[in-house]
Amino acid sequence: MVYTNALPDSGLASTWWMDKNNDAHIRVYYQDVDLFICEVKCDKGIWIKGSQRCFATPTKTSLAAIPYLPGDGNVSNIPPDLEVEIRLYTIDKSNSTPTIVEYSKSQTSGIWSKNATVPTYDLYPDSALGAVEYRTHLIRVFYQDKSGYIRVSQWGPVTNHWVVSTGGANLRVSDAPAHIGTPIGAVQGPWHYLNWAAVVWQDNDNNIEGSISINDVPKAMSFPTKYPASPSGSITVATWSTEKTSIYYGGKDGGIQKLELNNDNWSGPINVFTGNILDADVSGSGGLASAAYTSDAQNAADHWGTVFYQPGGQGTIVEILI
Image 1: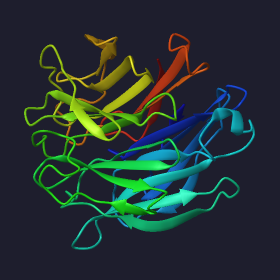
Image 2: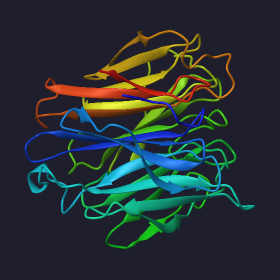
Image 3: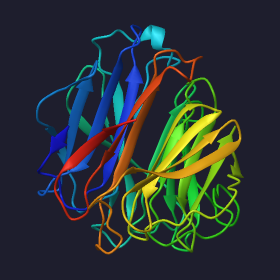
Image 4: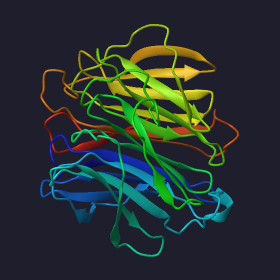
């Protein structure tokens, strides 16, 4: 997959779901040079040629995407040829107070609708975004506040409203302020019924940092050493089980690096792609997003995935199979 009309340093997001035939469906979102959010589709391993414009945004924006799965999200309920509802999150910086805005596309329509804004605590205007959805439509949107902390806003279908941080430790994901403008990667657990999510970012010294939340209680990832990242690089996280998680990020000296957590043991970093991408010396390096999926939710060894990246300063988006 290579698409060439993306805005340089575009926001980048991807999401996926499995149908009841165990076929993967992937959607990638980026912003084009006219500030439209665009969608690229992959169904059953085949990329649909070209991209489709979804809606225009007033400003350049970060992106996050989730599938809003029908019912309880069990793949046995998802027919192979049916779209699922998609929700996209952007930041509107056209007013004095920046806001996170939710857009959605239903299962039966290709038309995107603008929903209500997502309330936040002291949102940093150029914050990156991450989002997950699990169980019966529990949505979590991650962002950075102006003091540098990573926070989360929570949606629940029972209360039918957003719960927002009141400051301090309330709904705070990071123990300390992160690098201002840090990229954020977020992924829900491999089994939709679990209230489990991994979130990663850069600390104030541009080292990789993250947390794993179980039942909405974040616990800092314990790294054996510091892993420096490019201050202008991006980050994404993929998981195949609660015991196997991979972090992909822009390395300090360029290229994409990979860290892997397997049964509580970290390995890496290793170079998974090197060259003129995520160049640490380029202002506004490109983004990263990922999709990780398995044909058997109980067998993490049987897995596939893709990392999507945008080379720094370019208008192309490319995939790496993982």
